[in-house]
Image (cartoon, rainbow, N blue to C red; front, side, top):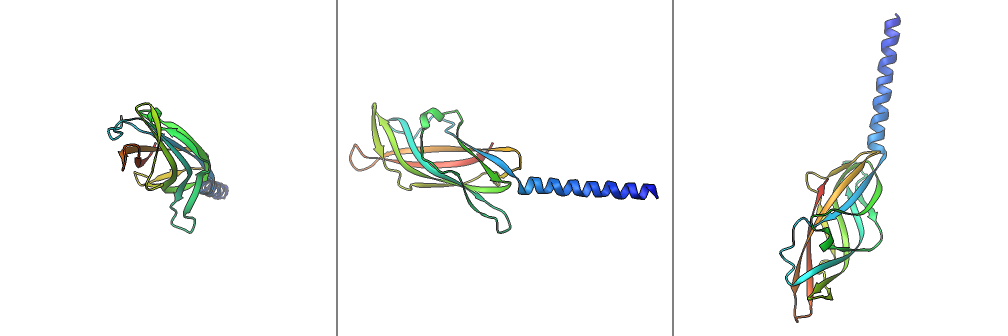
Length: 178
């Protein structure tokens, strides 16, 4: 009889522990850390030696099978990034606590761009103004109590438009779970 009570107690402890772990990993929060990089010398910068992007409102899309899907703000302030400084280097641009779960897209607005041509900074137009990127490898999973890194590899093409003093910056990116 004692072994039955002991067995039932052990099973109850295992069930309670499993339920607690399930709740912790699926309903807790984890940290998402966003990094930016440009892993190779940009071949499409033309005469530009520096490219600066002013970005804001970085959001990530939660992709849960239930009704908890949607966009979550990771960064809600604008900042500049010098893409020349991110060549072969990862630069952290923000981090935030998010609900544990799967995420499949990231998007951000590009407010303006500046290119340096022959030592002179010039404003450049970013035609799209918004960049939405699918997260490769099936997305990322933020686990409760853990930090998950997401690397955004931004590459841009600098194009003269119209007169010799007008430039467009055409961004492209891929998001890679780190």
